Length: 274
Length: 255
Image (cartoon, rainbow over all chains, first blue to last red; front, side, top):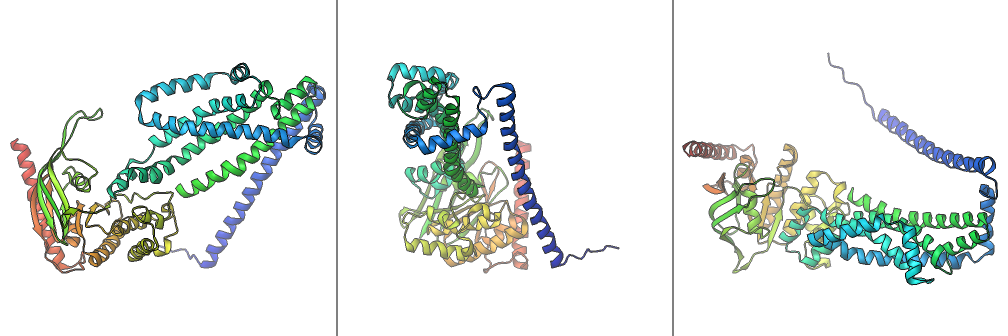
């Protein structure tokens, strides 16, 4: 004989409450494991600083933290950080503008696709140190050099993703738009741009990460202000604490930017297109 | 009055890398549709039904022959309901509706809300397509097609991806909106009962894209699939469908 289990509303709400409790516990366990990871990293840093190197070669974490705080409170951190940030942004924006046009060409023109893919392979495989030195040779010590070099390095990443986004557009949506009499410009703004946005954003994120590194490196060689310049100054006076502290501050600003801008945009977009 | 005049329409797809043979989708279709009628184009797979609609919509060009879709002598505005809803995933339901409108005004917004209400979706106008079921998405597709106030409504097997119950409820929604607007409609399907339930006239296409038969359906509306009169017409259409298949088989054997 078939027996039907009795599922009462109370049993269902008890089940969902248990599920919710489990989800909360899982989330806290994850956060705790991240915390353990960071603690382990700092622990390993201490070990290396005391046992493998000496504190002059690799200062301990608390020394670097103190030095960072000193830089924030006593030195002109704002001027240098602002200089670096503005150059990264300028280089990135330049790359974004150029990439949109070139990405479009790659997506819709076979000749440009072949040509630009070769250039991309060449640019991506060129060591960024070589590009930084080349910047110094071509532009001298100026703001323009780091901006141009950052743009050159960031462009391939955005460009290829723009092309990928455009070629991945659902053709059926374009046919739908045409059947309803949408104009070419309406299809570009209404279908092509929004549907390639996630791919473009992924490329932009990657390009931004590369741009930060490139900017720092070119500033070390070819700038008279900025975080890279400060790292070089610390290096010249054999101030390892200063070098690491400036690097840490730079990374913190980079992470804040990444989390506040890119991750938020990506989250919003993914929520809509899931 | 809207008119669709199709004369000796042929469509041949050229060979491609993946399929190195010419494909004849339409082989000289002649038909005309005039006035506020609902015409079902019925045929098996490969009979060129979708190609026919795409050419009428202007998104494909014919190899030869002509199609004239006019309303009082000027080119007709077309509304298209596709097999899949084809909604823009980054736009809300309401904004998907507004996308196909030329003017973005309070009036167009009210019109969009009106048609969403007609298909029972006004409450979800603020949601994104991914938050709706497949049936609800297709209802948005239907409402969107009516929103442009089309002279001619084209529908390409809009319920073929739905389960039986959802398909049935969508047909009811479609009947309701169509009875309200009485637009000239061309409805492509391979489902005989769907054609009989919705259409005033059934045009049967045989494989290769040739009109085999043209059957009038003179039944009162709204229709219900369980109605004996609907079933009787369905039986008649099925008989003719069988004779078409026999003719196709015989032709193939003779050839």
